Length: 245
Image (cartoon, rainbow, N blue to C red; front, side, top):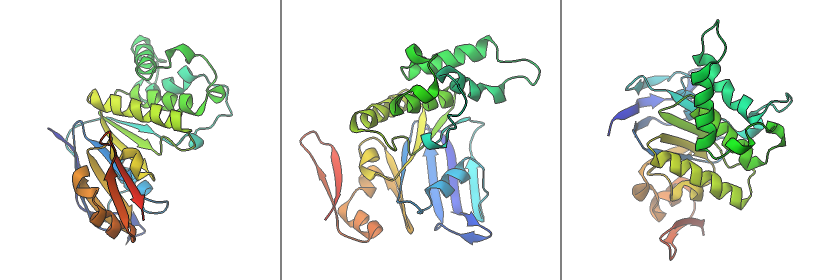
């Protein structure tokens, strides 16, 4: 497996003051990395560093090839004031790849259509984005990221505000994309949401716990991270569940 992204002895923070402990992390092709932690734990800071929006105070962030990121923000951060269709929203991601002189062309329209089909919303592509359900809006934003033909898909709290069915449908889609070879980095405050999907976890809660899922999802490790007794059990379908005791 090829390395795509590597943090080597990285300290992250603002104004020269670290807000996270030292990070050593490697992301490989086809990884599904879950980044989990409560509000204020540093998840956004880690995302900004991955996307190159902030530089490390110390250490090095290494991108091992000229790969492309597809970023899916939280739905609440998307302005719905303008009467844009789902197709319009997805096409926005192609503008940075277009010529400064010529508008989006055939290849851009094909990339947009392919992305819409990948997430299963080609039938509602011409409906107004603001009229869509929460799950449909999220699929539109995922399609927008996919239209850039990324190597790494980064999702920030993709299931916020969703009901149980929409949440499962969105997570099934993300797992399906990962199964097709797209590397996934997903930020969430819900550990159980990624416990059975990711192959690696980073837990942020004043300190960092990271590693393969089998290493991180133990009662001892989680209790140390969350500062209280945490239990881990598997149901009859071998699905992992984490509960506070």
